[in-house]
Image 1 (tube, rainbow, N blue to C red):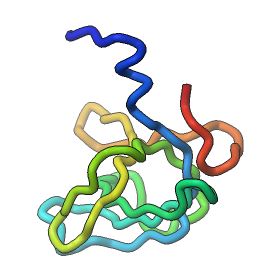
Image 2: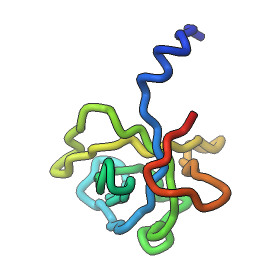
Image 3: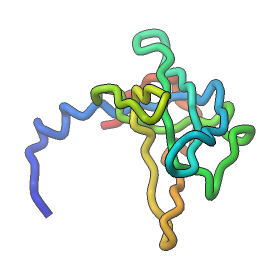
Image 4: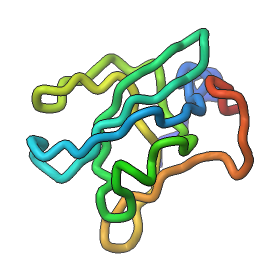
Length: 112
């Protein structure tokens, strides 16, 4: 495992946001869900495509708070522009489980 400095880590901007809208993304190469996430007034609403269909469907994601990297360069995923990277952990079979706070925090709060 390569080590990085703490200052390098501080360049990665990880924030909490609330899923406002979620839709299936059947055109994606791998099963995915399109997300529209609010990161509060300073950052605003951002979009993401996430391969999280093993444990989640669009209806259960609305209102859920998730953690995401908000300062990556946007990435074209098929016909959809993904602006943030939603964070999760992989189960033994490769299904993704989202990372989020245990209690409600203001959207846009930074992870330290």
